[in-house]
Image (cartoon, rainbow, N blue to C red):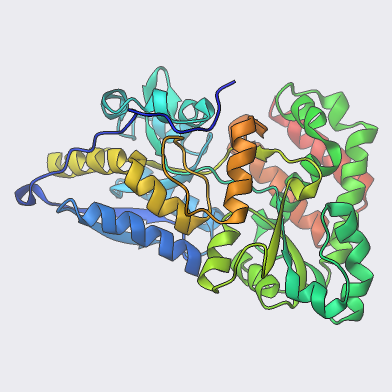
Length: 409
């Protein structure tokens, strides 16, 4: 098994343009929180240093809001220079329609197949043997973030796993705390459910359902336990009324909530707030139960443009995103893991090092975006919104969920 380690001699070459050929390039994305903005600034600074200019096209509201806008612009004849999507099938129809730039020449020149790990990241960018996107990070959603202050205020130890967290809820509530912070953006409840699936159901069950497409397992008793755990978690989040994910993270930062199930991008918010991993907050990958992470994350696609100078700038940006220097600067600010293993991450905090350790062991699974279509993902997300915001029974939710998965077979 390939290990996450330093690999000498694997350095992406980045050709820099002359100032005379500098060009503006609009880049759309949904990174608008404090930590995300700090990370995007690193990408813009690196691109501007080439003599070109990053024109920021941030769209507030998260991916669910941004993606339809991005897709509409591309299909409507008003493409941007580059755009963020998650790893997986979100941009597949755009690629199939011939609307995306082929990056194969850049990828082969800079040996992306040799340096990008895990290989599934590049596989998600590949269609019919050609590469259409540049991965920039690995983001795993299976983390429980805990406020050390909240637990100190409640007079109880910081939990070390999900069961201890659930058991700590009465003491937190007695201290006036919200046990579980959860925002109202639709994807957040779906993310929480996915993390609970890995923690409670375990890796084998996850693979049976999501990789082997075993619908008997999806409808079975082990998955029923996952839905019951999610129903219990729903009670813990009942008094969380914030909207955005970073607002929920702020409840943890300020000690108003005991914990939050959120991806490793939450680290960016803790960093902006000046908090230190292990001192001010605690992180539990796999909710402290099953230390596996899914290797989703973000990639940039480049819509086809008629201006050859902008096309050249697109290819230069694609190469730059995968370069060592940008990988380090961006991911240290973003809280995500780099997509190449030959970079110096000695400055990583304790939580990021935990993620790197899990990646090194190969304890990884594909993300939901990589194993299910965008339509199945959206239906599942809608179901989870309804489940978390209503009194729908665990059994009814499981039955509806199974039918959604079957529709994607």
